Length: 492
Image (cartoon, rainbow, N blue to C red):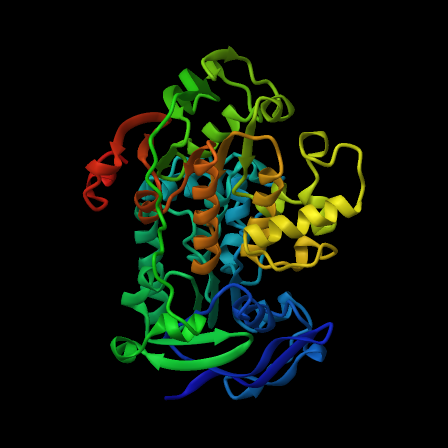
């Protein structure tokens, strides 16, 4: 086995805390190497080391690319060396159109595409999107796209590139199966071309058919590297967490109470069309659909972020929700899927983030008092979030960021929780913590509207599931009617 990329005793510390501890890792030409590990295990840190996010002088150990020492000062150095990375959080330019984002002037893009006129970019984009069944306008600005759409643009853009090493960090989060088929074809092509692929995921099953080897990190150290054929004789869960996790979907069955939220013929932005639904006290109502179906727009319409027509009733009283502030005052909590872009104040402390709702929490006019700190510690224990109050979200893992965002609303007066992809890009242990928090909410009489692309998650957690297609609700499935995922897919 000839290694194309090699890491020998790679270590990295931040504030005397080891993020990587003498990691030995390798990639072979044409292989797909899956990297597993719980949140904070070092997966993304290793990816950032290999893509030039950390300059060489802060890293110990040796990295070789095609037998030669690899020295990186910036991500651009990595690109010029043939290393392309899709990070956990998709990045496109907000002020550029979709077509321009697709054909960026980048060293990873084929030279021919860099000189294309805009109208040609639009024409190619339209044809690509039609073939893939994507309903996104080539002229739409980057800022108007949700996370899943941004990821789709990044993946399609990969098809124009010719990397030698490809690093993918949770690339399929929030994407539907139709688009995943395109992604798998792209992976097959890259492997055939001899591209070395490092694939970071919490869901091994999504990429297992294309996998050659699997490595597990725990606490910044390499636990083991195995081949796919050795998988049957290994306990991956034991390798990742050190102990086996059971009861992945800890569902609590409760009697459903009165109607607390009702929508009648709600429409929005020519995307949502006459949406009608009801949510009851103590109920977890799931909403799913393909990318562009309108489920995220539905959450924003209910939360007053975007204007809509139709009628909204809370506790059977008609109301007009014209702003997020008004929604909060009515007891609505919206936990966005974009925790970095709009969910958290990334440069403020965890304590300030937790109490950032101000008058709608127990904070009122208090600022960093003993009471606040006691509340912060109390809720951190409640949701299993072991962080310091001074730590800023930028230095937290994805799971910690999600829990912090959720904690803010747990300390509010909210009774109706709208969760948009609440477990996206976090490990299984953190997911279970969030499922337990959701259960705790409904036990206390709250209601949850849960929007997710993860059908397994919805079928394990929800009492009912609504399917949205083309901005319309195409069906409703109760928990008792769920037959695998087949009857849900028929409606999507």
